[in-house]
Image 1 (cartoon, rainbow, N blue to C red):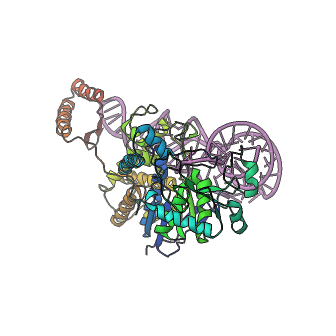
Image 2 (spheres, rainbow, N blue to C red):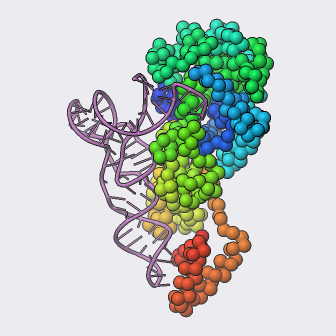
Image 3 (tube, rainbow, N blue to C red):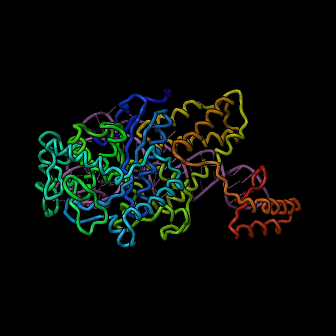
Length: 488
RNA sequence: GGUCUCGUGGCCGAGCGGUUAGGCACCGGUCUGCAAAACCGUCUACUCCGGUUCGAAUCCGGACGAGACCUCCA
């Protein structure tokens, strides 16, 4: 049991408050996060959510919790929305790309896995798929019908929100009231087979043109959108588990309906803590596929988006994202990215310096206090921006020690070094110590720098400046320091 | 139309009753053959109007502005 356990507070969307984190089974944590629907390549906004939950996963591990992290893959198209329109995103993609549905999913899953590697996401404990759990979904639906909270119409099954509301409270997560829902809705869409407009599909009868069809007690069809998460979360984490996460936009209706399904089937809410990560904005507006204002996580790394005139490393992007709280909106702009890039390299420079520092018999500042501040930042609802601010404070101290204006003991130095690296690398998931020096170029550069140094020793400024300017044209920057010349 | 969130210095972004958040840029300094880089220092803001309070960016009310959800969405 880590001494740092027990201080964590989490903002629970269900209560709207920060709550002390107390796992259901002492040091075990069950966490379920809604993953992507793989009908296309996940965009940067999608990635932000996964990166944020990766950070949360990492910190929980750091606190020595035994975490079971389940993140699903939606590989079944959902053919209805409450408006009654037919929207099967995967089927649509399959048709337009002339592939089978699972081929589409496989194709984009390969890309998604690659993105996870690029952005240094830890693999979840398990990534279950919707199509692999059709049986479990059917069983849940049967139980809901049995409990009287769903009805069958013409081969489809709908959740009965009115019946449910007699015993449970529909809308506890999103704050919506069933009686008000009717007036709230801008346009009352065709209810079709539904008894009440707020009812939602648990199972939908197949259309002849559907590409994926499953057999069920109600005939051939497809599962509804929400039931897959209920089936998979309870299968792998139990009826009631610790954390359920996802993007803010899933709060309603998806998470609300998950709660209803869980209560309707098992009599209890699925999760103790609900966490919602906020959206990524582009020019103040939510990045989304439908708005078309998105770019892909690979494009920004390769520098191929029109939005930015240069590529950024995945580390810089992660660092940039971690400078904003997971519950806040974040605007992606070139200026902000450049600022993050500079700040990040400042932090890296300090970390490179840390192992070269000379130690003293005493420390001139409270190192333990500084380290504690790393933990308390993260304990306060995963406040990564504060953590980073504290890391910069540490970086400043390192520089001051280097300048002889601060002192540190051997013991303090070693724990500061360990903790800084731990938080940057293991908690924030940002790789440090990456050198981009080309192995073939390095000896050439050594030679060039040596020649320039000779010229400088001879006070031949014309030659030395010519070398410096020439390299600059080639994109190589020469840095003269006290300890010699370096390049990048 | 309904529900909700938010409006912080040139930019990004924390804080949410009393303390310098932090980063980037600017400016000053150190270093340097000159530069660049690096490091140190400085810069003290909270949309507006009322109210509560000894004290408000932080709480309450109002105005204006922005965004999210209500339809597939991370």
